Image 1: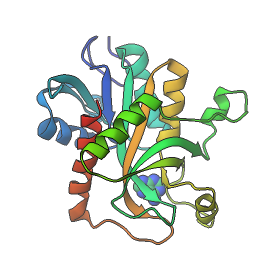
Image 2: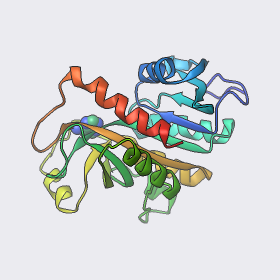
Image 3: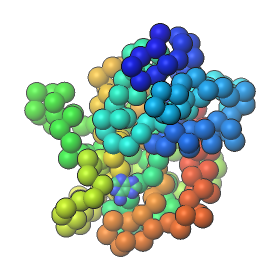
Length: 233
Ligand code: ADE
């Protein structure tokens, strides 16, 4: 049955959904990496597709930007379409001095300036973490493909344009690798509704050094990350 934001039918989604932020990236993955892909939803042009990869069913759906958008789609996928595994694939901004543009990063945990996860636990802290099995499979897939990956804490922010970027060196000191805008929301929703979640990214820019990946290189680093995610299933 359709939900307010997904006009698919029961059984249209596979148990595992890869979620890039951009719905056109979802289309690109479906067209270039999956076999027998068909579009299953198009509300607000937030496209979702289901096909197979190496014979295994898999879906790809855009999440949009930010915790609220990701949380809406993740909740509806889990609660109304029976999705069990959600894997965010996206970009992040490097924070740590050891984090370089084009690096692949797995979010073992996600800190945040958002209140959504505290709201889940009466105002206390909630450690938003990746599912260990999905994380292990992802790291193992990267190793098999010969791609070096970093694993650690990330920071999910509500504000891409930070008024006070002097906070980033403080996060660096605490060992936070990178900043994104969705992962803490995804991990919180997955915990609340009993699904598994994991996020991996490529570093598109560095918030301390100001470096950025040239646009012409973004596609190849994105493809590497997609391959890791698909091979991890
Ligand atoms: N995703 C990619 N780069 C980012 C940044 N600098 N801040 C937040 N999210 C990002």
